[in-house]
Figure 1 (cartoon, each protein chain N blue to C red):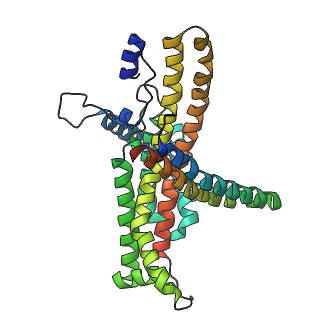
Figure 2 (cartoon, rainbow over the protein chains, first blue to last red):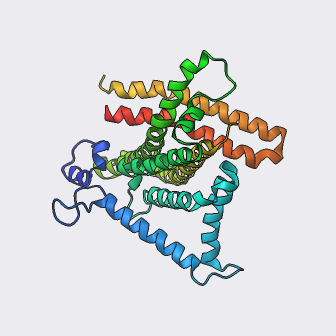
Figure 3 (cartoon, one colour):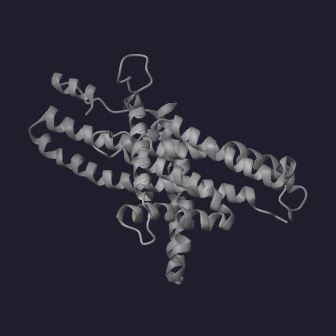
Amino acid sequence: MHQVSAVQAAEGAEFNAPGPGDFEFPPIFGEGTFFTKPMLVIVLGTLVIGAFFYLASRRATLVPAKVQYMGEGVYGFVRNGIVADAIGHEGRKFVPLLTTMFCFIAVLNLAGIVPPLQLPATSKIAIPLFLALISWVVFNAVGIRRHGFVGYFKAMMFPPGLPKPIYVLLAPLELFSTVIIRPITLTLRLTLNMFAGHLVLLVTILGGEYLLVEKGGVLAVVSVVPFAFSIVLTFFEAFVQVLQAYVFVLLSALYIAGALADEH
Amino acid sequence: MEGNLNMVGYGLAAIGPGVGIGLIFAAYINGVARQPEARGVLQGIAILGFALAEALAIIGIGLAFVL
């Protein structure tokens, strides 16, 4: 489970509190290669998603069978529940991108509670960073293509119907908020939610294990408490992981809708 | 007393989002209580608002570890 803690347990040392250092992983095959545990999670996740949608769409019938029903359920959830509400009928060309993002983020998040892997790969900042950059490029490109380069920034920074002096305050704030803050908060929201959740699970599970193995006696009986807590928190983590995938895709859809919106 | 000032900062920073999320879901519960048919529409808005308010608390805990 956790190598350092096992060594400490053998020596009877103090509790080694988990921290950001627990998110560093060495390469699996040989030194200097890129294939670390997060990479393994990403590769497995991609294969699982690809296999699922391939099986769901193979020999598709009008009245769906089991796997096709689940695949249509996921696709329908993103298309009807997220994109139709946010963007409307123009959103159909964005549904494949947003479904892919939703499935990718959800599967990578859920890998945090699947026993052999137990690492939410999205807790490493690179993956949410590039997903947020994809979202950023898409909503800016869509806006620029709809309104023209100058028109897009004009519609963003100077929304009509406000008294003139407010624009002095509003325009730089809107520019900063839309172009710079949005990808940053998308990234940080996703990665830090996964980081904090994984850390909390590590604390409860390793703390329980420390009490059980290290201390023994009365404290070993007390270790039921952190273990029970870790079970509760695992279920809560599963909920948060799917929720964060939903929120990421919902916000991306809303940003695209905002870029497409015609004020006049 | 040992410890890290970062964590005290995070604890203080979590007050705001805690209150904010409470207000958001209070509004959601009120809305659904007044008009139960609006539940589906309001749920999406409530989740969106929750995620935006939560983001600040999450950035707080992230920076508490990093800085």
